[in-house]
Amino acid sequence: MDIKSKHKVESSFSMSSMTDIVFLLLIFFMLTASFITPSGLTVNLPTAASSTISMQKNSLTISADLRYFLNDQEVTPETLERELMRLTGGQEGTLSLNIDAAVPTGHTARVAGIAAKLKQKTVLVTRPE
Image (tube, rainbow, N blue to C red; front, top):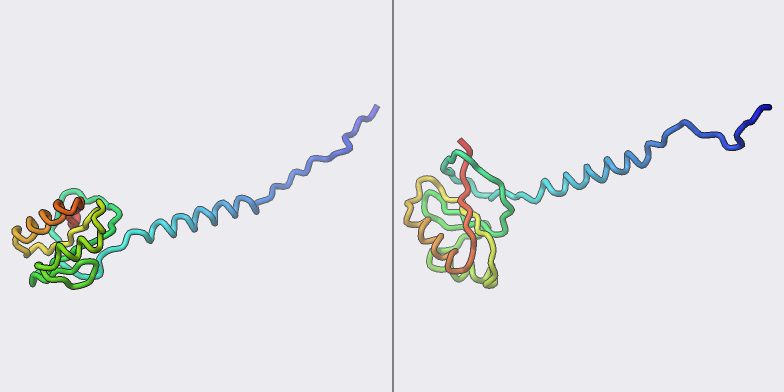
């Protein structure tokens, strides 16, 4: 008595679904890696023992010659508060501070006070040691 199955099991494996998943993951990681945008202005950042990466919405750069740049647009220290208020619209957010190591601490304290008044969390950008 010879019993044979009418349906044969195919032993080949299709890799097309696996390649689709790999390409989707590749696209996902390529897109998320481009969300961290460094400031376009070069300043000599101070060093710190630990440095973390956070998403920035607005950035303020103070160069060694005390020029202020808000999102790469030059502003004066007198108009900084008004321009930051215009950018944030009164909503809470994060302000990334790219301040040159040669800038006196008084300027940093003044900017931090303006940011706190406008309900902006401040992140001081540093270079890792």
